[in-house]
Length: 200
Image (cartoon, rainbow, N blue to C red):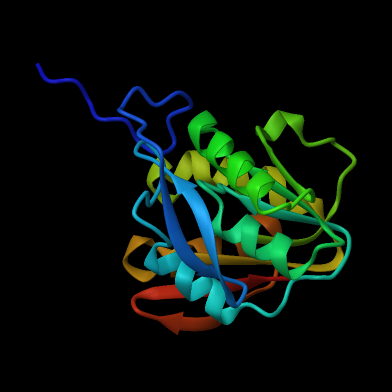
């Protein structure tokens, strides 16, 4: 029986983690980032994240911002570059992804990035914005648990922006958030098979 390949939501990927540098465009500039196997989208910025970053308004200039399921960090790095006076919390279960993001942030001089496990975010932190390309493939139960934990931590008047592939249940997720969490959800954009959901 063959071994199951690692998923990007594995805490300690056993697959070969050969680091390499890639140049990607974030926040209107070309930046050199660290990527590796065993993390989500190791080849660069995935289509869903590209759609999200193109469609969301600029992040708040100050306060605590959250990238939920950060991977190697394109969303967190964009927030940090755009809002240098904000604190960007980048949360993932994948230790390799967090390490890649820490290395890139340090090289770019982004001292406002905190790449951490969920339990390392102080409980009293409330977020001025949440941006996420959530890990849909973990399954509905785990995904719903994540959103139950993090969406209630939005500050008053703050918004979350989620990008979800249409054929992976973006519309049903929007209905679930409205019904279960009592939040208003608007389909803010639709592009290349992805929906950008604005959660108020």
